[in-house]
Image (tube, rainbow, N blue to C red; front, side, top):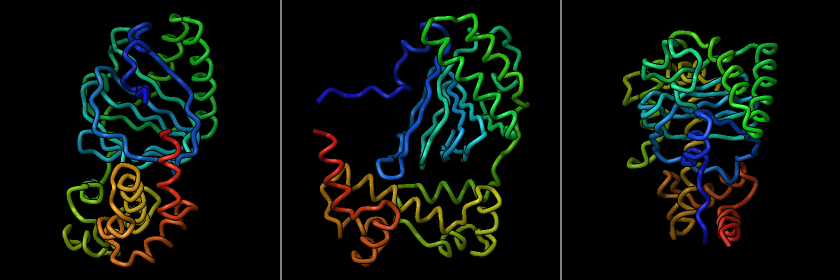
Length: 271
C-alpha cells in the first residue's frame, strides 16, 4: 500500500514559496492517533477555529483551542498527544521568506500560543482563507504580506506558559513507557493533593485531570488496537483498566463503538 505523506513532511510545499498553508477540517475523535515526535526544518503554525490540540513542544505542553494560533519553532521537536474536531488552518514558513525578520519569537526557540477574541479571530480566519487561495495560485507576494500582518500581532515569547506542575502531569500522563495511573497517583508523585491537581489542570486547560486521564486512556487504546495484535483484554490491562467489560463500556462511551468495532474499522480503512 502506498504511504500517504503527512503535510509536515512535504518539503516541496514550503520550499516553493517559502511558506505554505492549507485548510484543515476533520472530525477526529474516533480515528485520531498521536503524531509521533517530529522535528521540522521550518516554523510550523496552526490556527484553530474549532476543536483542540494538545501538543508537546520540546517538553512544554501547549493546548491550542478555537481562536488560538500556535507557532512551533524550526528544529524544535514536537508531538501531538490529543486532538479532536479540528477546523482551521495549518502550514509552515522559513524566516528568510518574510519581509520582516526582526520578530523576537523567531530567535527564541520557544513555542508561541496567541489567543484572539471573536472579532480578531474572524479577521485572522478571513486573512488565512485568502492566503490559501494565494498559495494555490502561486501569489507569493500576497501570501507573505498577509502572513506578515498576522505575525505582527504575535507578542514576545513568554505569554501563556503552562504551570510547571501541569507540564509535569502531562509528561507523566502521556509517557507510554509507564502504565497509566489515577489522578490521586499522579498527585502523589507531584507532592500535591488530587483536588489541587484538578484545580491547576482545569485552570490551565478547562478540563479536569480526570478528563485528561480518560483522554489519554482512549488515545492509547486506539493506538494499541490499530497497530498491535493485542487482544481487547490485553489492551485493557495495558492502559490501566483491569476489567475488560468496563473498558469496553468506557471505550464505547468515548468513541461510539466497541474496541472490536474500532479495530475492524481501522483494518477496513487500510485496505
